[in-house]
Length: 214
Ligand code: DX5
Ligand code: ZN
Image (cartoon, rainbow, N blue to C red; front, side, top):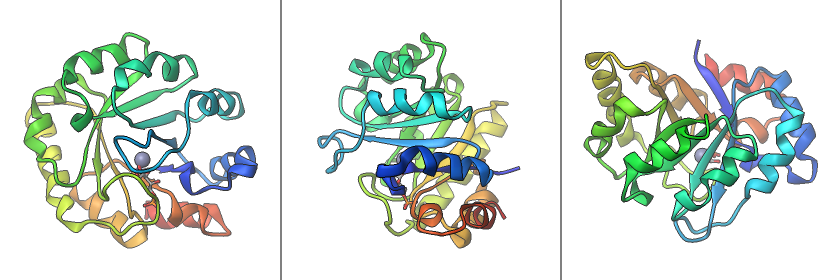
């Protein structure tokens, strides 16, 4: 079954604990945490301290999406704060293989992310080393943007390589995912759908999650 990962970026941070419980009760599979540094992306969000506070309130895997420069410098802190999955951008990692191994050295699942304009070929050599591939369907930095349709063939391409090479990583998509766009992604081979505004802007989170999963 398709997994849904609500992005807390769109939640009410004044009651973050309740918001997380609400999506957990609504059937969320992962909690997606968007970390932005004001350099790699033009926005600043949250750090390891928040991951540490969230950790005791949910058993769901914490899927930590690092949109930061020099991720190697912060991987230890995010791992120790309780991340289950850490994803790093190919565009921010000149030594990608080393960074992926660093994440794994803490016993955390490692994922690689690419922006909409980055060709899939650039991550082909690392596919056998990752637990997850995250394809951005918006330019990272903000919630509530429109889905970029030209990324869909890239989902199929990664899925094709996964099958050909007998690999088992998950394919996740992030940005502008709502019921209509979710379908395009799952049909192309996505396993995990990140959604922020399409879940947290709805009163009934279970209904919103179900609509995306369909
Ligand atoms: C964008 C973030 C996304 C974002 C998704 O930079 O990585 O996770 O929160 O938000 P929506 O679903 O509203 O596009
Ligand atoms: Zn994200």
